[in-house]
Image: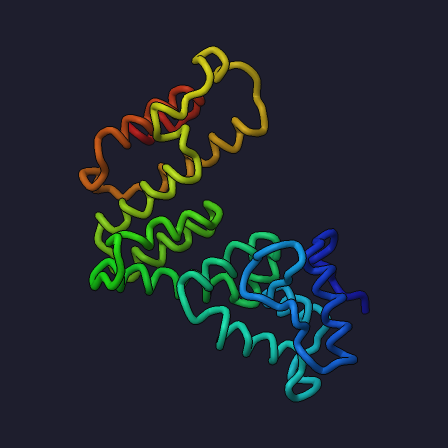
Length: 241
């Protein structure tokens, strides 16, 4: 029986397979395993976890197998804080769909949303909304999952607004800042570049996250989104009205 290959052409998983092979002979977790991506010379535990599953190196075949050991590392080291969970989550963007199938994405999202909700209600660090900046490090799809989890946990609308505003300003400054406009209106209308397509998708995703209580958002922020939506000539304009 031919094994399905959901990780074809994924360099992260390919390297993970190599590391898994090294473990077979050494019986030790490779020394370059880290929490999240910190450089090309380092490697992520979540990629090794995916590789172990693909190679069926699970405890069902042998106790204390590679999958179990990488799972222990994730639980006991990588996923013990929001910063760690977000680092793992960011690297999971290149490990899909396996990272979702193994619930790594879900666990990261739950850890991040739980800590944000707690910090929003009981601040323990300064500045008060430090966590909003932390959330800007992940892609929009994972950010949307975190917002959905925060909503499910009963996060206040102003907490959601803080996260969304920070994400919009950090990820795509030209969507929300007057100073970010580097081109003229005609140049924004001309052509259909890949960058502009990503901008359109991003603003649509951001608008989709806005809660019904728009009063939590500064008027300037909403106007900036509306202006950019008009420039990008999308149906987002109707959603903003």
